[in-house]
Image (cartoon, rainbow over all chains, first blue to last red; front, side, top):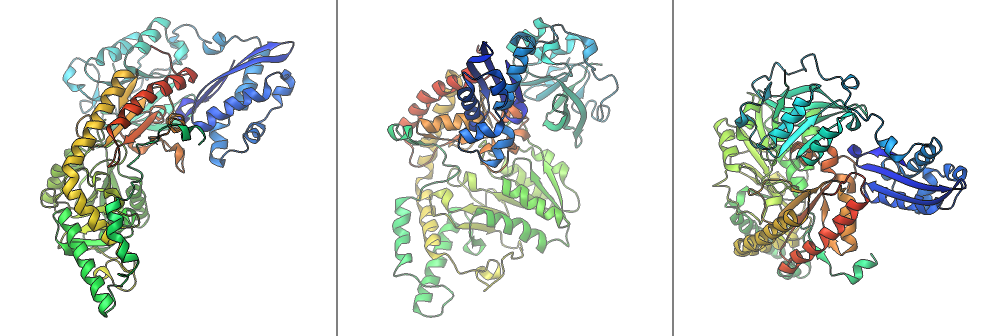
Length: 237
Length: 393
């Protein structure tokens, strides 16, 4: 299996291959993405079915685009991931990696892999009591608000995030850990809860005018900063 | 394109374009032929045109409770927005250089603000809550002694949220700051009266009340000066030069007349479609969410977010079934950025990309709601099966 892309920019693609005598016997895809992303993943599966692995590795982004009789220039960059996913699948197969291994390289919740914020976050003291809270004791503060809960390295923050969904429909849990690093039990409960978990993300800055209005988030996987509009930030200290 | 021919076509994107009402076309027809006069001419044909121009202006003024001298004709809503912001800023720059807009303004307002910023003005953006509503108190906190103008859209063209315009006007009036509103998305869907909601500048468009494209209006309250941004022969009291687009002006006047008569009925009818669609979608589709405000929203707008599905692929799948809707994500337009409105509501990029907008209009029927409720769950199920992000419940 090969996985490429990132849902943040709108596309995620997985290609699964079945190999026999060094040839692609069967190939399937799963894609989250725009029309071009779906079209390219479908086309690449048609192009390489039956090919030898070496030949399939030679299939390029342009080959896929050409087979579709061209793509709009703006879509070449973001959507034409299909060839990359195919190559990743072949490499993973040759290295003997199973889909399970690719998806779960760190099966345990490992604190040493994460770096929860020990130092105060920029803006944390400025907005303390004005949208930044160190506990969630007063549920009135959270009613119907967009709440961001910062992972502090323990399970308590995750529990708190799940608990807050009783008071508001919008709770985001931000953690530097990868999804796969979270204890499977907590991970499963987070998934089933109404909490939106932001993995591999770092809270850089809390911003606003008089009270909290937004935060700056660093996507550690993409190495990309973006603003997220929230009303409340909970940092258990 | 091939399969759509066999499917019944349902148009649910009235926000992006509306057909012209046949009654409007009838009213316009003579002005392409025998009634071709230019109001600037002093001969008989010119006099006739002047009379019709002023009668039309009167009808459009009546539609929003204005007086006819407060109505300027432009080439469309985009020009009206430019004239309002740039015209007011240039004319009043000695009073101050600070302008406030909201985070959820229609794109033209954001880009005009950027232009003004490059030309010495300061822009503040007031944030919104998760339903895209501006908090008048937050707006007040952005005001400085340099603030001359605020521009807050009447209703969101995307998520359909209506702003608390009366409270917003009150805050600004108290401080002597002019208020502009782009009212296009709410036009014909919300009764508007500049005496009740005392905006000073208001953008209107002809097509949004089923008039022809290519005509807009800027309402300018008496006593509020603006500088022209288009120079020429001095039409529209020197504020907007260019020969009047008479067929379109007559068309918009007729469209306004029809809207005034039929609006309350239409609001009820479209509102019932909207409510049935929202209820049906939220009940039948797991992990579906309504974007925008649950009650304070345009009567024709239903805007959803579907987990683990990308808006454009959903839009294209519906297209195959003959249904025209619009993506919340801007992937279809010229950038790949997600909608700034959805981001301002607090959505993450991947969530904003999974949104879809349905807007009803005059020629929709109750069966259209049945059709979309029949097709949408099936299409979503298929796309979610295809999506590596979705883990079914």
